[in-house]
Image (cartoon, rainbow, N blue to C red; front, side, top):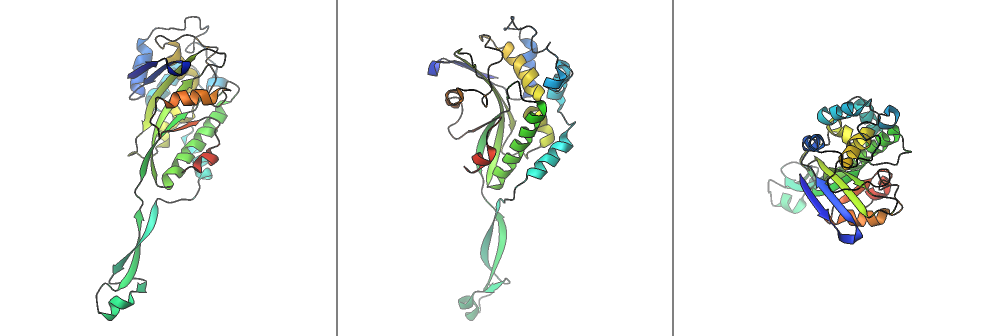
Length: 272
């Protein structure tokens, strides 16, 4: 795990980046509760309709082994959203056979006097997309899944435009009551060399319990953190969103793309 603690931009920022969810789970198991005034804590506050899980243990099972209960439905949703696009281009070349003669070469009797064509893969540029699925408390778990499916579809369409997408999960805790704190959890989900595996990534991208059990449990146990009002506001619902986005970008690469719950993904796709 890589930890950064910073006091720039007038904010106390803590960023923890884990190499995978197994390492995150080990940290959750080894840390004591810091927000001791939480009553009940995220682990103890069972609300199946809100968190889409019976309890914390079930959420941990999904974190360890994946969530595939609704994968077929997710795939159907993504397929229904699909837009056309391609990562291929047409390349023309001389050949002994083809669809059009090259007259000067034919007159000279050269064997490769026909024009032919083939589809070739476009060389891809790699981009990192940092996805924060955090939603306000009045957002249903069904809406979180729906937007997660839109995000998966968005990634597929970006790749069709000739990019290779690297995906990182992020949950940013951004106070809405004036506290000068910003806590950021990050875990890589997909490298640019891996296919976009919906089943493997579905829990982190589409399941409410990832935020409402596990990310909340992480922040309640974050060393040197202080309790913020509730769990703060999500990026999509924060009135000071731009200030927090500017702060978060200090800890990312300049070209990284931040996507958060509630964004207009169709508008963002125009940038590619």
